[in-house]
Length: 183
Image 1 (cartoon, rainbow, N blue to C red):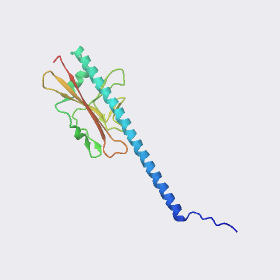
Image 2 (tube, rainbow, N blue to C red; image 1 turned 90 degrees about the vertical axis):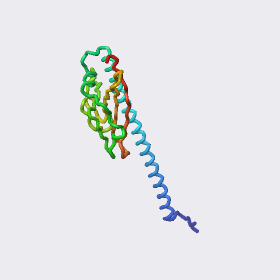
Image 3 (cartoon, rainbow, N blue to C red; image 1 turned 30 degrees about the horizontal axis):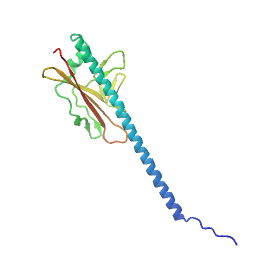
Image 4 (cartoon, rainbow, N blue to C red; image 1 turned 60 degrees about the horizontal axis):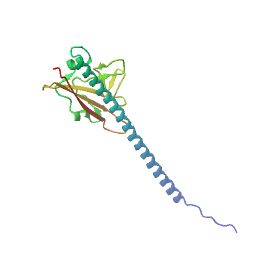
């Protein structure tokens, strides 16, 4: 006599495939979210480094100006051509899913060469906000001159860029106050 072995029914097989598919899709979704979070964290870290470089360059230029106040240079160009009375509101940097620069006289500093060069043209960021070579992408500075004594400049360093997996751009900003004791 031959034994009868019972197998799985088609319903049980379909149920097993469905459960496996749901677990797989959920796992892939979690992995994609983790990758997107890691990407954003890396971009923010890179942009903060770029902003720190801009801050260090501004401080260097300020110290050079204090040592030689009558010497022409990048600091003189900034204070003569790029100062404004008020900086763009930080909340105004985003319009829907786009970065918006209302800044009247934005600039950035190129520190990649042998000296510090002034960049007056700012482009939208193709990946993350950065100064790459002689091109500023999604990173700019606004110089606000004080009318009080002692004279100082507030440098609003701003960054705005679109990142993958988010509908709204990422924005970062900081303010650096530098004094002119000779004025």
